[in-house]
Structure formats: C-alpha cells, structure tokens
Amino acid sequence: MNKELEHQFVTELENNQNIVHKVCTLYTNDRDAHNDLFQEITIQLWRAYPKFRGESKFSTWMYRVALNTAITLYRKSKRTIKTQNYDSVIFRIKADEYDATEEEQLKLMYQAVKQLGDIEKALVFLYLEDKDYREISETLGITEVNARVKMNRIKKKLRTILNP
Amino acid sequence: MDELELLKKDWQKKEEHLPKLSYSEIHKMLWKKSSSIVKWILTISILEFTVPHLLYLLPGMKDSMDIYDKLGIKSLSTGLWVIGYAITFYFIFLFYKRYKEISTLDNAKNLMEKIIKTRKTVKYYIIFGLSFLFLTCVMIVVGIYLNDHLSDVFPSGNNENISPEKFKSILLWTMSIFSVVLVAVMGLIYFLLYGLLLKSLNRNYKELKQLEI
View 1 (cartoon, chains in turn brown, orange):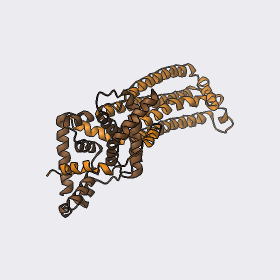
View 2 (cartoon, each protein chain N blue to C red):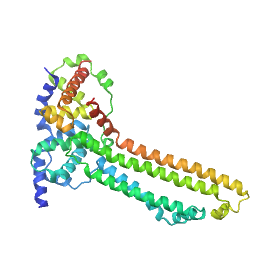
View 3 (cartoon, one colour):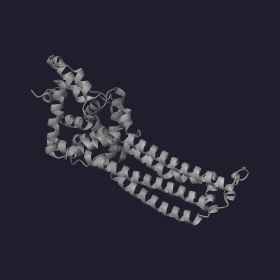
View 4 (cartoon, each protein chain N blue to C red):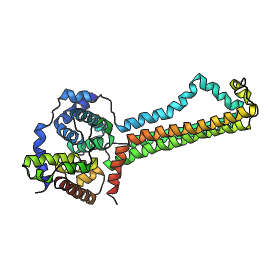
C-alpha cells in the first residue's frame, strides 16, 4: 500500500514539477536555495498527500501546499535574499531604460517582481498562473474583494518601479 | 498594455527553461528531513520543556536541593513544585493539541494563525517558567533572610573571617542579583530566538491582516 502511494505521489509530482520550480524561482535567488526550497516543498507535499483525496486536481492542491511552504514554513535565513529596499530599485531602474526592447522590459519586470514581499509575490504568481480571484482569495485566506484591491496596489507598485 | 499581461505571456513560455528532476531524484527527497519553522518550533519547545527538568537529574543539583530543607522552606517548595509540574503538563497538552492543528492544506492566513497560536502557547509557558524560576529564587532569598544559622546551610562560608551578619548580607545580595540576571538572560535568549525565527512569518501575517481593515 505504502509503496503504491509513494509511486503514485512521485509520478504525480514528476509530471507537475513545473509548479514547484516556478514557486522556487520566484522565492529564491540562487540554485542552492532553489533546490533547498524544492526539497522542503516536496517533503510537505508528501506529508500532506495522504489527506489529498482527489477532490480537487493534484495541481490545484499543489499550489496551496507549495505557496504555504514558501511563504510560511520555509526558513528565510537559508535563502540568500538580497534585502535591497524599494528605493534602491527605483533608483537603479532609470526611466530611459524602460523604453528599451520588450525583452529588456521583461527583464526589468522580473527584477521588479523579485523585489516584492512574500504575499505580493504569491498574488502575482497565482495571477501569472491564470488563477481567478476566487482561487487566489481561497489560497491566501482573504476575501475576493481584498485580493483585487491588493492586486491593483501591486500593479501600481510595479508601475512605479518601472516608471519612476 | 498592462505590464503584468506582458509578463504573463512570457511566464507561460518560460516553462521549457525550468529544471527537470527525474523520478528517482524526487523519490530521494521524500525521506529527507524537513527544516520548516514548525519543525524548529517543535524541537525548541521540546528542549524548553525537558532541559530544565533534566537538570535536576544531575548529582550536584540534587545536593543543592537540600538547601530548601536546611533553609526550612521544604514544604513550601515541594508544594510549589507540584503545582509547577501540573501547569507544565497542561502546557504540554495544549501545545501538542495546537501543534496537531497545523496543516499545510489550510489557507495561508489560517496556517499562519495556527503557527502563531502554537508559538504563543510556548511563550506563555516560558513566561510561566521564568516567573516560577524567579519565585523559587525569591523563596531562597526569603529563606536566607529568615535564617539565623546560615553557616550550617552554607558550610563553605564558615571558615572566612567575616561576621555572620556580613555573610548574610553578602549572600542576600548575591542571590538577589543572580536571580534577576538569570531570569533576564534566559528571557532575552528566548525572545531573541523566537523573534528571529518568526520574523518573516509575523511580517507576512501582518500584511494579510492589514488587508482586512
């Protein structure tokens, strides 16, 4: 029974590992930290797996556990996050750089997203993954209205970073 | 165009550049040890519950327990210890109950709330433990104050060329200062430890809470 559960879990995770990798990319800055977070998420997913009863899709269930691990359970000190503050980012990205090519613009966007707080990153991540506000609000435990308000604030914040 | 929409398009294209782990690589991870903050809270809490009690198993500590007897406060201290243990067991039960409620399947806010609640149980236990420690120290100080034959209790002080009154006042001051320093240092270590461990959790929780206002 246990072996079967193990096999089932690893196969599911192998097929859906992109979700975890994307969370790791957003929340960490180097390869070691990425692998470390991936491992912690895998452990938490595996622990919670017996409670997964297939009521939702495996991937939907994964978003919640993965984000919970990244936001709440994972110990920050092991992450080599550069605690650059908001001002220095604004200072670094000058207005004329924004008129560059689309690729350049995307690079700046990714940099800007990286500077957001943990909760803000979670919202952006779910948004980028094409989740609706109902799912975003359920994952974070806030109301749908508040999720929208927060998202609008994040968009404004990103715009300020890109167009100082 | 919305900046995020642009990013969304690119984000979905990015999938092909993500790392790919094999079945066996993922399988190996299942048996690795977790280093989550919940695990840390559990480990630290178990230490906090057990270490002070293990100290009494040391032979030296047993001898020092005789001080209560010699100071004439044995029954008082025994009574206090019984109450102390009863309260400790209650805290352990409460901690275990709350710890069991922590689930990664909860939404982020509930999960944070439950971790904070579990941590608070330990916090109250520590406050209780520190007060208890302080009370024990006060009890010894009072015992010293009321005792007129201190040279019997502390034989090492006997051969000094100091008057019993002076010996008593030195002992009283030493014990009082030691009590305050001990409680303050232990309190500081504890609050620093948890403060650092839960710094980002508290920040994220505040951010979610602020949305409700």
